[in-house]
Structures are given as C-alpha cells and as structure tokens.
Amino acid sequence: MKTIVFDLDGVLADWSTGFSLWAQSVYPDVPIVTHAECPSWDVRPGMTSEMERVIWDLIKQDARFWEDLPCLATDRELSGISNLIANSYTVYFATNRKTPGALRATRSWLTRHLESCAVNVIITHRKGEFCKVVDADYYIDDKSENVDCAIWMTDKKTKSYVIARPYNSGIYAPHSKSARRVSTLSNFLEDIYAEV
Image (tube, rainbow, N blue to C red; front, side, top):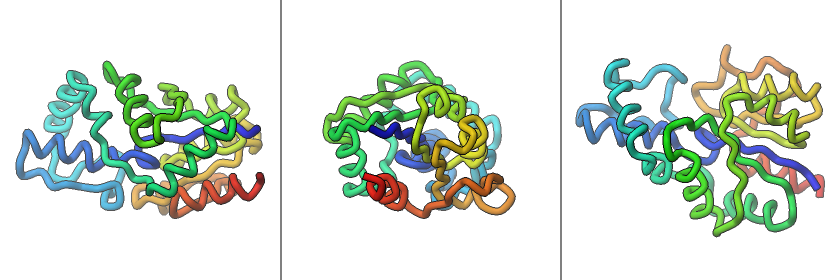
C-alpha cells in the first residue's frame, strides 16, 4: 500500500483565520485574514510583531487554538482521506505545531473531522526528511520550500504537491519542476485514487 503525508496548516486547517480570530479577541481592530487572503508567510495584516508575540503567548497557554481551527477541506475531501486510512494506506499528518498540548489537540481535531479514524500525527519542521524516512509515495503542503525539500531528499521518488495559495506563488512557488501545483485537495486525492 501507498504512504501519504499531509501537511496540516494551510492544507487541511485554516491557521490564518484561526490566528486572526484569536488576535481579534485581544485587538478588536485586527482584520480577519483567511488563508485565501494571506499575502505572505511573515506578514499578518494589521498586526505588529509585538502583537503577534502576545497572541503566540496565548496560544502556548491554551491548546484549544489548534482544536478550534476552521477546516479547509470539504466533506468529500475529508471522506476521501478517511477512506485512504480505512483501506490500509499509511497516512501521516506532519505539522510544525510545537506549542504545549499541540499534539493532543491536533489528534483531537483530526479525529473529529475524519470520522474517528486512527490518525498518525508527527510534529516536525523537517518534512522532506520525514518523507524520506517513511518512504512516502505522496506528499502535499502549502509551503513550497517543504515540497522542494521532499523532492530533493527523496530523489524525486515522492510525488510532491503544493496546494495553491496566494503566499506560495511567484518567487515563492516550488523551484523543482517535479512539484505539481494543485488548486484543491481533491486534485491531490484524485491522483492517488487514479493509481489504485
């Protein structure tokens, strides 16, 4: 069976909206910025670096942030992922969530959205290396650098996809010609199921 690695934030979970909502609870004038509106990795519209630090301090104290993130995947896409797990595919969810309680909260979030499937959550920022270690067949992320790294680390064995977001286009797009850019998670799942 195939091994599939999913990134979470920006692919399955709307981190940007969640962060904006938490920020707005402290700073009411901060705009809600969804993943589709987020201009870059490093810029949070309406926020200073000090404001961001305050919000991160709150997140470190309360793992509910990760449990309450809005879901980006459609019901059909979630069902497609659940079916992969139910049909004995090895599915990992790799994330760089390092705050206290993030692992438990992430498992809870996934279990809720994936119809109580058993989930494998890995906390790592080295997703390319992780793809190599688990001999991943497929990998999807919204961060182009991670996709390029997976292609390089696995010598192009892992079919690597970047899900299109405003912050990963242009000069921030994957540099590898092996990377496939998809507009939806459904496009990624269709490629996996096409090989069944």
